[in-house]
Image (tube, rainbow, N blue to C red; front, side):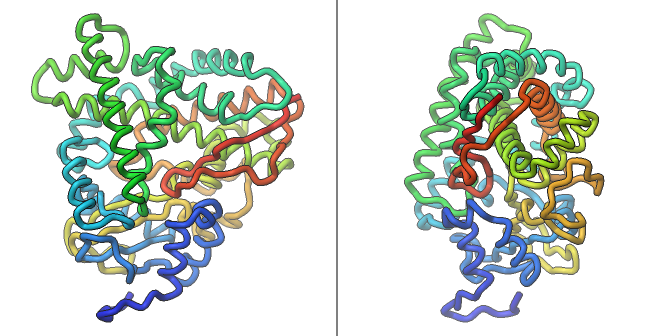
Length: 421
């Protein structure tokens, strides 16, 4: 970090590497060597090429301890409008996006007390005890999906990684089975708004997808008002009707967030995790012979190739965190994928070890924004990998280099072709 910036910024190697990582298909598809170089040479770096609308600067963090300290700091927030800073937008486009965002308050970008209030309305449905009680039903759903998947050549992403998680969260929330398939495209389109670098066209597509999901859930809410059911959406409606705890827009935003996050990240856990196991056949066999390793294995798969790679925060005050000073209003980009491969935290971090017991990664975040669905994702992962290894004597990877979707915040495969025997 430098005390002053030249009037005409000179793009140095750290900025060039970061823009390659964040803004190019090649960097997004293969981030880990780039993370390692950043972590070694520029572990806390202020970007010279800054985000538009960001007078206080953007810092990028890659070491585990620094990332964890920022995510846990009580004066580091997720101010909704401020987090809409994005490379690739003009000032006018940025202002329009901030207006769009302010109209849609979301738990994902809320600070206390709003975050505390919104999270409290749904947190009981996702406690480890509540989720564990769902395990037998998740097993039944997994068996149904795998029965339909059969054997032979299969795209795991389309046949298993999407259908199972969307069924689980769809039943919990109350989204009818016939409607769930339409959300895969909508959620992926809307996720472009989470990318640090986004084109105006992609952002327009993300906003349109959000509007379509709002329209769907507005109709579903109207149905549930007339005919409540035993589902989470009906519970949220009751909370809204009960007073000022939940506005109509908050109800819609919360329903969309729970449904989208409930399947998208778990879909990527299944795809990324199975690919990692197939590329490490010794670890796959180890897990096959010792199913008791499943809880540790799922946590290791989450660490090794996390479904969430990037997180963003805003410094609420002038801060001194991890030996570094950040001014109030600064944007802090936390590269969780880099932190999860930090050798200072995880010995031999580029090695997959299904029995690893070196402590928790940052794949679910930490602090007050720790992933609400962490327990559900873990149980689904344990069920999926356990049932796959029970059912199939052989799982053969048919593409040595399957294509990742062109995103860095959410990391997942476009397809994973395998042969099941």
